[in-house]
Amino acid sequence: MNIFVASLNYGVTSEELQSVFEAYGEVSSARVITDRDSGRSKGFGFVEMPNDDEAKAAIEELNDASVKGRNIVVKVAEDRPERKSF
Image (cartoon, rainbow, N blue to C red; front, side, top):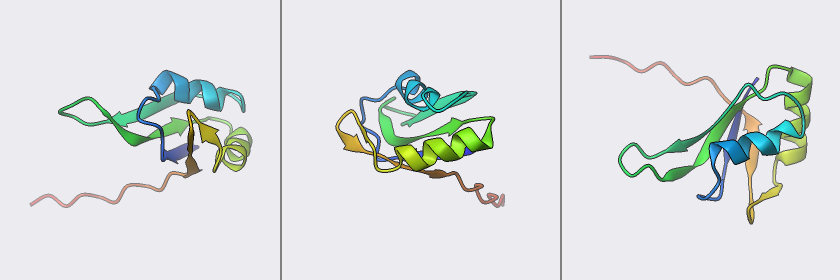
C-alpha cells in the first residue's frame, strides 16, 4: 500500500521516515520529496508497505502523531491523475 505523509518537519530524512513506519511492519520504500533546485524537503513524502494490514495500522496510529515536533498527516496515497501531453 502506498501511504502519503504530509506536514513533515523539513529536517526529516527518508531514512528517519522509514524508521518511524518500520515500527508497524515491513517498509519497502520511504521517500521524502525534495525541491529539484534547492534539494530542500517539501514537507511531504511517501511510504510503501507491502502488507495492507500493517499499513492500515500505521496510518491509524501515526496520523496526527508528533514526529520531530510536528503533527503529521498520514493517509492512503491517491493515484496521480494522468498528465495531458500537448
